[in-house]
Image 1: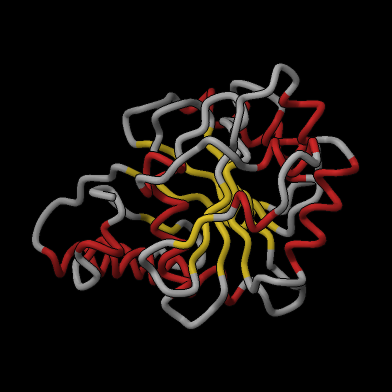
Image 2 (image 1 turned 30 degrees about the horizontal axis):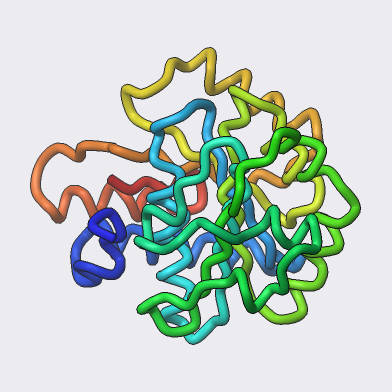
Length: 230
């Protein structure tokens, strides 16, 4: 869990930045219930799994019951973030071979649970778009205050677009120096084409210039437009 700085160093500027993003998401909840949120990026290695893990921890620290669901059925990584097993998970629930309590994991963070991918299926898009998947999300909403879904990169496969059709909001992660502007535009257009409710963009792996105070001023100045964290 070395990448989950909200656990390892909760007083750090980066953990504070995640709390700022949490506040922005809460304020987006005024006119419409934002309960199920998927996090995607334009390509691999932009840090979306790190972002979603830290965000989930921040919400759980508010005494909210939170679930992270690994929706990347092609290249799952949430189990590695938390150092837990990926033997059983989402695919077992969709195939009805295991019960939820046999698949869900408790974490060291109070109120935070993790549902890993499980066995990687041969037909991830079909499983994610199935009626059973949509029903599963509806069932989980009855038990959790927030559900964060780690979706595959929207610029690589269509899965994140599928997930966006039954979630309340989408957070788009952009890794600094990891992708070009055209790729970001294409990814954004793909989300818009499925009427995804884009809550905001997180510029990840951003190296601030100057002192820590400059970092805070820059971050809070941008709140409500773009949430930025290192």
